[in-house]
Each structure stands twice: as structure tokens, then as C-alpha cells.
Amino acid sequence: MRGPRRIRSSQLGFSLLEILVAFAIAAMALGMLYRVSGNNARQASNLAQHERAMILAQSLLAAHAVVPAQGLHETGQAAGYGWTVDSRPYPTAVNNAAPQAARLHEVRIDVAWQDGDVQRTFELSSLRPQRLPQPGEATR
Image (cartoon, rainbow, N blue to C red; front, side):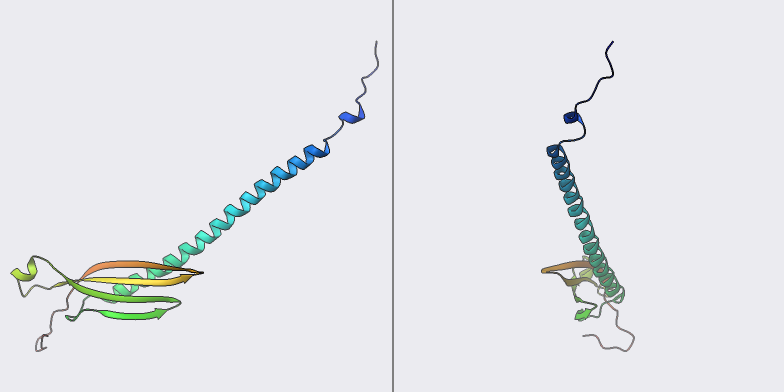
């Protein structure tokens, strides 16, 4: 009968090359994970800026429920966002058929902001009725 088998000392543990390969693989995986999480944070910031621009545009549109006969032409700045509100008459078949009917205007709102070195914009457009003249008010 033979005695217990002895393990040679050269077979114990990992070799230095195996450890280096494992560290290299782990470093590449951590680098990719860092890059992905950095991109996610950047995208979240971009979405937050875009959402603020959209809320500003919706607020400006809500402030103009009706459009004066001469139209809208406004610009301004708010919290790092530049905006413009423009309108133009929107042609419909009713315009010529019924002169007393309210005319429509296409209202366009452009919001612009700087995102690092990149200029970003958001556009919102809608149709709004032209404000009818009040009794006794002169029409232009």
C-alpha cells in the first residue's frame, strides 16, 4: 500500500501570469462599467435640461391663449434659456367664407440653451385663435 499522495509545491495556487490576466480582465470590465455609468449621468443631465426647455415652451404657449391681430413677435431670456415666440396667420377655408369667424395663427416657440460646447434647441408649435376685437375697438 502506498502512503498519502503528496502534492508538489509547483501545483499549489495560481501562477503570476494567471493573476495578471485576471487583473487585466477585471480592469477592462471596470473601465467599461465606469464609461457606461458616466454616459448615463450625462444623458440624465441632458434630459433634465430638455425637460426644463419643454416646460418653458409650454408655459409661454399657455400665456398666449389668443393671438392679437398683428401677431406675436417676442424674445427673452429665462434661467439660461433664450426663447422666441412668433406667430403667423394660418390659412383655412373658413377665412374667406366667413369673415366674422375667428382666424387662426400658428404660434411657434423656440427655446435654445448651451450644453457645454453644443447649442441645443427645442421647438413647440400650436394653433391659437386670433383675439376678436372688443365692441367699440378699432380693427387694424
